[in-house]
View (tube, rainbow, N blue to C red):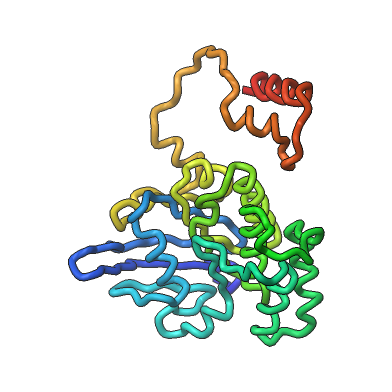
Length: 273
């Protein structure tokens, strides 16, 4: 197997305990290069602990984990050079502008042309118009997109997103989802932890469900759906969901829709269902 064919993330038998509390109990999974892998689980399932181990912030009690072929325990420096971590809360400086935040990170990484790097990322994440504004004036979705953009300074090949849409409103979540899809489309490997079922369904190429420290199932969305009996085909008049109503009224791009547009969108959604 060549380096390009090998998985970006390879985890075997990962264990971690805090005194009597066993958080991870032998976790196994692999993540293909350029894919989005969702680690799905409720609060306390062990998702953040797993990410901390993979990003070298925490040592495992047992098991092995490799990122781009580097062992997280014995080759931590090499791992850190090829990854980036975006935590549950946006790590941005509200006093600085969006562009200044990106330039600062590029300078801290001793990269050439920090201004050009910042401008490229601002354009990539649709933040150019807000580049000169203080981050304190940004919406939740804009802050999260800037946070992810800051994580990409230096072009890491693997990025960990730990519950990236927690606390965001529906429109902001959709903005972040689009940013994550674009990351994978450009070749970045994404490991996403989430407790939102629809988030995993919308984004992930593969989904692993972590429960009480163990992976209880791992597969594509189609494979997971096949675990249940086939649904009976019945005709039911499907009413628009609250999400349909919300998006029809505010518009998918956040711009307010007219009543006629809203009615048309809701009717189209109903017909598609």
